[in-house]
Image (cartoon, rainbow, N blue to C red; front, side):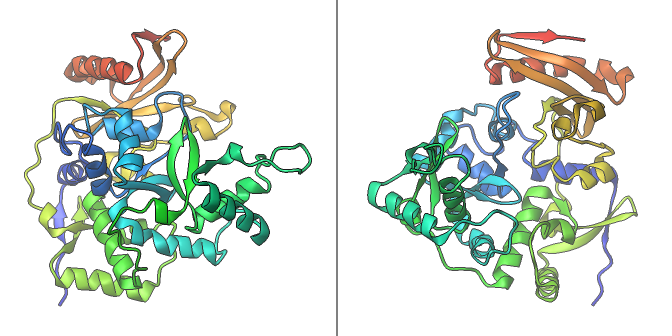
Length: 381
């Protein structure tokens, strides 16, 4: 039976997405250390990134959803409580420990060498694994050799061995010291009772679909399977089954684009907070650039990865959200030496609307400066 898709306005679509992203309530995941695991479980992942122009992306994403967030909570969740673990999603990320088994298909891809990462010799991998097994948790600097240069940490050969062992699931990241990974055996890290049974394709696709729609609100099928090799026939069968179970449905947004949505999300009453939120470029909300443009009419590019002479807005511009609209972006830097949050430039889509949100923007900047441990805010332009 063919079911006619629901019809949503742009405003309804925005509200569904923002609510799913945990950006419409003041404390959607609570305000204690356990909030970190709850947030990551709901979102499916939180991307981990090395750029530190301002506080790193994983902390930034979490503090937008947990106002009382403390960085030590993330460490505690990974190391002490073992409620999250570090692995590869579409990028390096923190994932819910209870979903460990759904990382196994990705590990299998690496084991079969169906990836573009450099390989490592079996001999090097065996030596590294034997040392970790015998000595306990080790980090990169613990490996030295008689290779030319004396250090084994120039991405050859031990670093590639560690990386391959991690990607293939033979080593896990126990925790981090500074920002350096400390590796250990999975059996010494996995929480008691964690299911390590590889999922069937149907189980895996069902997990991908429901997790994505729970966190993203609206999604196209190709977005759900992005960067993953899927069996198109089985994937479609799982979609059809979920429709028959009345768990998901198709929706047309503004009578144009068609998306998938959880049935329970259609008739939610979502109240938008009267506040400005400064988002990370790696935030789960903005990472899907095409949907961002189609639904929010916000064309966003992170320009730190393009040559300086081609940048339009600056090295590290952060998206600025007010209610359910993007105001623009601000190019920022946290100058730790002077404890100053530098606002290098501001780019507003509609400057004439400032009277509506300028006070909320000021509050957001002060909060963001505090989050970055900056005592001052300096506008450079």
